[in-house]
Length: 335
Image (cartoon, rainbow, N blue to C red; front, side, top):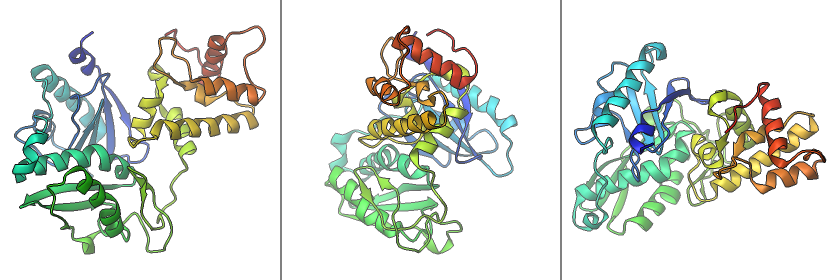
């Protein structure tokens, strides 16, 4: 089956963090090597033009196979889901460049316009996936003479840690990626931020890609990763299971190096919790990319370590299917 055909298969999934955002998940990347975010229609991006023609769509983010659509406060998902899915299919049938052309890195040095496009692409792929889960977003607004102007929104607007996030995290990453940048300027009106994600009490914030952490205390509690993993797996439709480690990481907005390792460690924590509570392993719902669709070797090793490994008369494949079936309360269809 072609990538175009795969992309037309769409499933809608509510966001575990934000009821105003819904994920429209394809079975292949929307546009290979390209991610984007839109706050309105863009001439060079057919998907943005089509989606913002639908009343009630206020924001669109695209990365890999996932299109995240944010609705307006007075909009209703029951009325929006079908038109959004139809618009996505129509665009994918007409073009292989639904997000527009990929910026040419060779042109970055000599053009502010090309540098703006490249910085926007970089923010969407490397930075925003990490801060979107905390309610924030950073956009490249303009580039003039190598001076990049960034605007923060959502939880980053008015956030006490915003300056540290920008200077110690984002600016460092941008300068390393684009030597043509002379200066990074924050043009956000932080005084009007209504719901900053961080309080002004010193502490620790989440880590940006590259392992750069900011000093600030969350104003609301952030669920530990094992709890996020469990909640996400519990909320997935049965027909979408099992899912891969990579898909789970992407669904949780984890794209930085080491994401799969962190996902694996979180799944191991859920296994210990399930063993202590005498529950089937929910971690069985996550598998590798191999043809057998089995978890990694560590899953079986830890199961044995917890005295809950395969029975003497069953293979690892049968053991895995037994735990998936018991955790779902229903039989899993054969792969």
